[in-house]
Length: 255
Image (cartoon, rainbow, N blue to C red; front, side, top):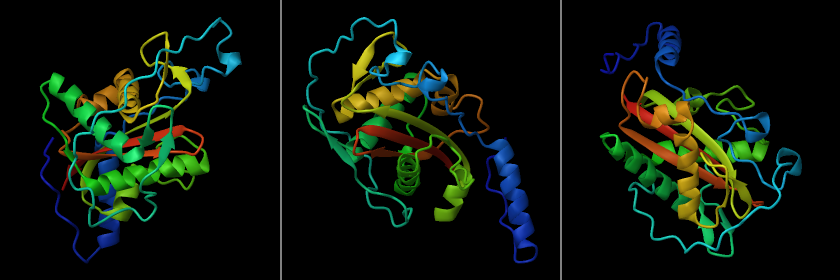
């Protein structure tokens, strides 16, 4: 695929050309399909283990010893971008018995973990983009506030619309989303056991494991079956007051 930026429309017929361009882009860009929530039967979406109807065959849930507090997250860069989503909630957190899990730390750990997984497959690291992260964070908070879990919000807006509304510089995009909990036992992705996320570092690893154990999400991270590679991206995490966590990772190929 030719990844050179297409010519931008001039003043004559601008609206029509922009609409056509948007339609063409939607045909060629990848939006990684999100898996259904575990209650709908997906094997990689975690469910709370205290939902007894879903775990009739579990006699006893073993919870391991408390983990060590998180190490210092690797810096991402561009913490204060010039352009942000007006609905970006900024930082959110939840206090566990081990540490206060801060959304910004989780985002940095996820970004580093994704790049580690890419390096394992000889792929270059994705640069952190603060604006893309802000759009991602706003979507995560919106899913929590309006109680849905999808790429398309209740207003019918999709990732491309959210990017265009904030800063129209993504030629192609991909989006992975995930939902889990902190401080409660949940199903462990890719395993028959359970896990309880009590640290930012552990939560980040769990989120990336969810994506890597799902074909569509894994393909987005590893640039498989996509028309072009990613050059930047941003992670947005929102931690609700009850410990529910929503995460959005947007990948971007700039104009």
